[in-house]
Length: 352
Image (cartoon, rainbow, N blue to C red; front, side):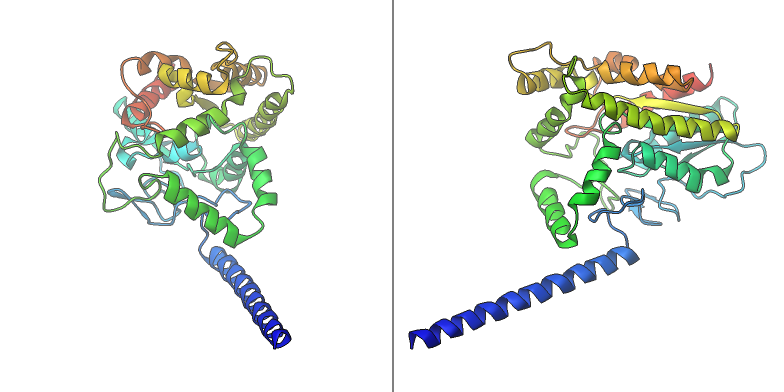
C-alpha cells in the first residue's frame, strides 16, 4: 500500500514538474515572439531601441512622433533656410517633463526667438549610452543632414552604460525572469508613472522613487567620486566612454558637422543636502573621501585633449540649486526649472 502511494506521489510530482517545464518553455517562447513583434524595455535588447518610445504613444498632453521620439514630426529632407540641430542623449534628452518643458524644445524656441530659424530634433531614447549615441548617429542621424549635433552626456550613468549593457547581455537569459524582476521593481519602488504617462497631469513636485530607494541608488553609484581609488576601474570606464565620443567626433568632422558635448551633472553633484546624506552612508568615517566634481574634471580633460567642444553644466547648476530645486524629487532627472536652465546655458554657449 505504501509503495503504491509512493509511486502515485512520485508520478504526480513528475507530471507536475513536466507541466511546469512545458509551461515555462512555452511562456518563454511566447514572450520572445511578443518582444520581437512589439519590443519592450522589460526584456534585453542589444540595440539602443530597448527603451524607445512607441510610435504615436501618449506622453501627458503630447504624442510621440511616428518614430517614437519625443518631438514633432520631421522630414528626412531638411527644409530650406533651416538650421537643423540633432539632439542625442538618454532619458535626460527624452525627459520626464512634458514636451513643452523639455530643454531641447525650449532651446529650439530660444534660438528661433533670437532670429535663427532653427529646428532641434530630439532623438533622446532612455537607457542609451556612449556606444548607442554612436550607433543612432550613424544609423539615423547622419541622413538628416544636421548642421550641428548636441550630445547630452549624463555623469550619473553614461560612464557605466557600456559595461552595464555587456553585463545585461550575459545576465538576462530568461525573459520570464526579466519580467518578474521588472514587475517586482515597479511594484516596490516606483510611486508614479515614468514613461509615456497619459490621462494624468504632470506634477513637478511628485516623487518618482521612494526616498530610501533613491538614496540607496545614489550611494551605489558614488564610487565614481572616490578620490585616488586603488583599483582604477572608473578611469577605465571614463576612457571607454571617451573613445566612443572620439569616434563620434571623427564622424562628425568627416561630414563637417560641429559637435558639442553637453555634460549633465547628477543631482548629488549639485544638491548639498543629498551630498551629506551620501557621505554619511558611503564613508561615515571619512567625510573627505568623495570628490563630487572628479568625474567632470576627468572627462573635460580628455575632451580638451581630443579637441571636442563641450559645455559643463555643473558650475552653473551648483549656483542655481542654492535658490531653487532643479531635479524632480527622488528622481535623477531635471524638473521644469532644471530644463529651463539647461536650455538657457546651451543657448548662451551656441551664441558665443
